[in-house]
Image 1: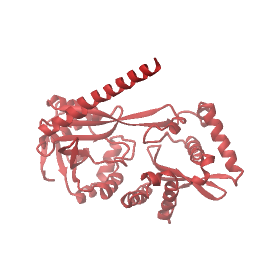
Image 2 (image 1 turned 90 degrees about the vertical axis):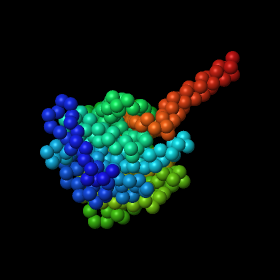
Image 3 (image 1 turned 180 degrees about the vertical axis):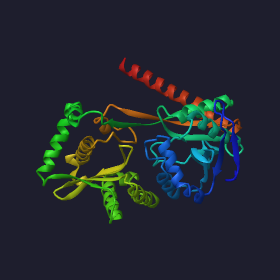
Image 4 (image 1 turned 120 degrees about the horizontal axis):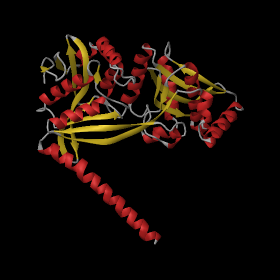
Length: 391
């Protein structure tokens, strides 16, 4: 698939043709930065995980053996759509398959295609270009598509129209808080025990030297500030679990470089909770379109009995309400401690499209036919055993 190759999309319902082209060289993607960010703004994608800074930084640190495959759509020379993808070879259920995947990984909380023109026309043109190069892929995999995603709806419909099998697999359910009310009314709406515990923890910390919220957005010494936050985040259980930012060199470098780039755009927020002048809790966040997106967080285990991260959450949320932000997205999964702050959550799905090739069809049958059946049988067996024991 050459970067110069173009596929002309004559889109039903759209008088103009969209020209689609593949980008397979990193330097060509880097050169797109101004156009790309204009497209993201026009596409009204509020989250930062499709920004040029995010995608470039992710690719530089996590691409591995993947081949770059970024699909762009233009109308009259103007960039109106994009699908940042990559080509990888994987073994799924023992089958070796070529996968055209979202340019994303474990550190990407959300993904979709960018459409800054007629949304249905752009998605149809992007799919037509993907379909036209199906000699290169067995499976298309687009991860972490949010509920209501136009990408999910359009690609699934286009693939079905072409007679291809598709499947959706549940992804993470991410809790979030909408800042649609006053802080006091929001806080008073939370569970009594949660409010009491947060208040008690803060008072206990106050008696140990006072508490304060520190916010770093950039400036001289940013690398040292990020490093301090990373040390806090790795000081508890995350280091042992291998999920801390410091657990792998490329992961550390990703978050360091990302902090530099998003700070230049005024989006970086490093939140620290200080007690008696000492930093005891931390969160690494990006603020985009008025929403705080929390990527990483942690606390000093010496202060675990004071629930320092819950106190930090309360202070950041209160500041968000006060400053007129729109919301706070915890990202990741719906852990119980997050649900204490909100009843709102955003489900995600992974979309798979399967070519007619034998390997792809076997993966489809195993993943979307046999695996759910085995799960149902396991649940039924467990319920039966439970009833027998209780009888």
